[in-house]
Length: 195
Image (cartoon, rainbow, N blue to C red):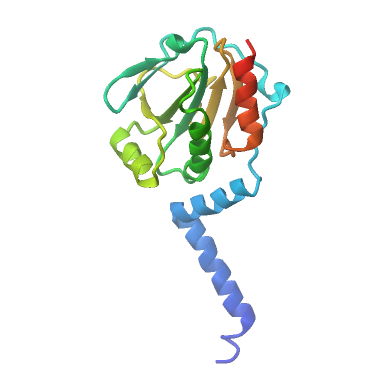
């Protein structure tokens, strides 16, 4: 019996249990990723080289619908900075980055020059709004209401796209990142002052 209950076996069993929890419990995975985001492991690359100011031929016709059925067309938002995030309530990296996205929203949500669109990839606005309410996030949720160009979204969650005032892609990233960081806040402020 002593052989079975040695420290090595107890440690290995605990490690296996932890691995299984992280593998099968999305909220545990999200909590781990959230900690890594806070520690600075997922810092968004906002350098000019990574952005490339990719042009999208025309944002008109790229539409999203809110929970009340109101349609937002990206073409109507020219002259504004658009923070577009594709996410889902079942996606651990999405859930992990949401507090940082909410921090960014708290900073710029009342700014008329910055628009936030959190597009639920599943289109289940009732479920996503309940999630936002439960977490006390003020983020506006939308469903995709038109064809989505592949340059914006290829199905990876989360995916975040930031458009500058001219409608050019200033930032595009698939994967979780810390959007509430001082570096990213400074990036948005730079976009506000440039044409």
